[in-house]
Amino acid sequence: MPGLIRNGIYKIEDVLPFTGNYVKLYNNHKVKMYSQRYTVFKKKGVVCKKCGLVGEYFALEAHNCKNMLKHGFYHFNLYGTKNGKEVLFTKDHVFPKSEGGTNNLKNLQVLCQPCNSKKGSIVSIVDFILNGGVYEYQYLKYFNN
Image (cartoon, rainbow, N blue to C red):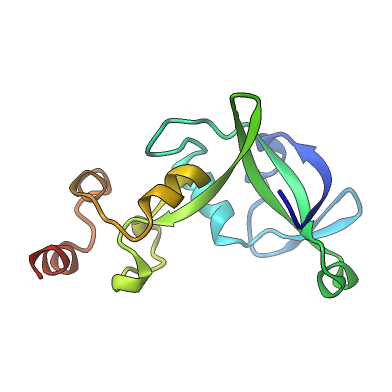
C-alpha cells in the first residue's frame, strides 16, 4: 500500500491467535495486538462477506511518517490477491456509524477494500438479514425516511 513501510509477511495462524490486550514483538517491532480489526478477523473470518475473496496473509506495516516510526509501532494489514494484485481487507460497519451504527461486533463484518468502497454508507436488506437483524429499529427508521 502506498505510504506504508512493509517489514514482513506472516501467515494468518501466526497472527490471529495472539490477539489480545498486549503488545507483541514481531521482527523486533512492537505491534499492539488489541486492534478491533484483528478481533473482527479472528471472530468473523478472513473472507469478504460480499465477493468471497479470501484473506491470505498479514503484512507487518507502518505508516511512513517520522512520528509513527519514531515510536516503533507497526500494525498488521490483512491481504488477499485478485488477478495477481494485493487487495487490502477492512472491518466494515453493517449499519454505518454515520447513521447511528455502533462498534459492537454484531455490527461489524469483513470486506475487501473494493467491496467496502462500493458499499459506502449503504445498508442493504441482505446485509441486515445476514447479520441477524441487528439494529432493527434504527434500520427500519433509516429506510422509512
